[in-house]
Image 1 (cartoon, rainbow, N blue to C red):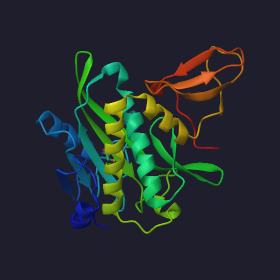
Image 2: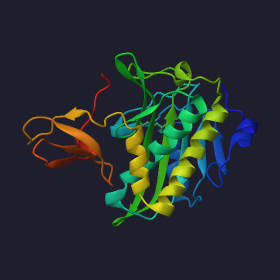
Image 3: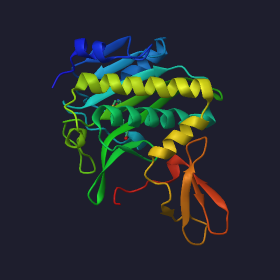
Length: 258
Ligand code: BTN
């Protein structure tokens, strides 16, 4: 399945995201190319798209299976942000993408903290997409970032994955999915720039599957309850004795069993 650039341009409703784009039939990683373009001075919104990746990067150093039939894209951002707040980019991206894909496909897509896009499939959560943010840092500041999004549409997927096509109410194509994702990303990024992280957190929590779930945290007696995320993307857990703990994204991995 190919990404039709004429259709892509037609569907794209953004101001800047995707207006300048580089499309590859096959590339190692759109994030790798994005980081190179970032270093070379490419403007915010520059987008890298691929129909297939041979070295797709996933979170925690994993690989992202990227056979033809999926959407693989990366966008260059030049935010004003402290390193300590860098996870805000992933949070806002997850919100933008889940809203856009939900609207385009009609599928009940949710966010599995911190950066997975999932659908409930019987007794399990099936991963239909993921987000990987990579950054350039100078001192305490993030001076540039590449937000990468992978969407499983009709490509081969690993065991924990599923194709969004199976759950979609509409017959989408790769061009429309890519344009929608970029629209969602731009909307969310604009909201973040204009209003800060608070409305992003509220939106993210609305789409997050974990709210209200019990969670055992080391150093606490008995499980607490997940009540949301904080401004750095950490899970907030409330215990019976009214104390609260935060669990950072790199401290915990939640499973796919419901
Ligand atoms: C995850 O592990 O959930 C994050 C996956 C992110 C994959 C996307 S595909 C487009 C972009 N290029 C990459 O190499 N990775 C991201």
